[in-house]
Length: 81
Image (cartoon, rainbow, N blue to C red):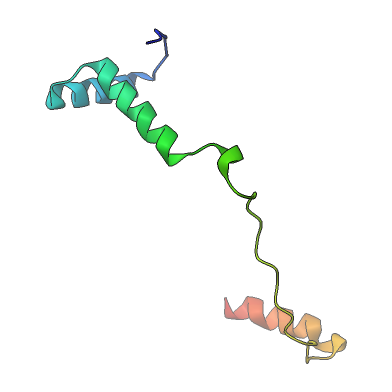
C-alpha cells in the first residue's frame, strides 16, 4: 500500500469525517472508497473503442424557403422564443 498526503477543503474534510463517524470506518477508508468510486465512474479514455464524436447529420433535402426570406424567418423564430 502507498502512503500519500492530500489537501482537502475544510468543508469536504468535515463531511468525510462525518461519513466515517456515522459508518464507523476510518477517514482513510472513506477516502479509499471515494477514489475507488471515481475511478470506476471514469474509466481510462484509452480503453474506449473510439473517441466520441457527434452523429453524422442526415440530409433533409434542399431548404424550401428562398434565400431572400431567411432573415425574416430567423427573426420570427427569435420572437417566438
